[in-house]
Length: 118
Image 1 (tube, rainbow, N blue to C red):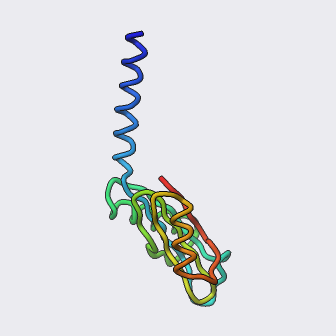
Image 2: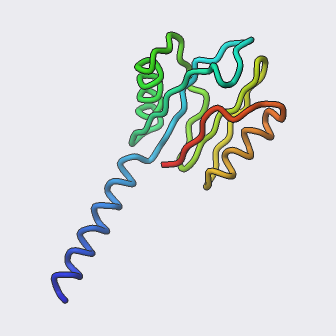
């Protein structure tokens, strides 16, 4: 029984270290006026700081074949990006549903492009 407790405690400590190591997320997009939501390119990024997550998102966006990537939103738990041919909306929150709802409220006629939680 003592071994189980030790393993459980070790696992809890490792999970805490991993979750604090990736404290921020970001979404970078390649989305220009006139582009449909399903044509927009994007990349997700993660990091221990906001800047690190933003750099990672831009890198992943460019690695996906997009030329012009800009950070649209950064978040600590969940984030979302919605767009149409003219407008865009961003959202963040404690759940994916909250982040997506905020993005779509920010841009009511938009389509959800990407959303994720860490």
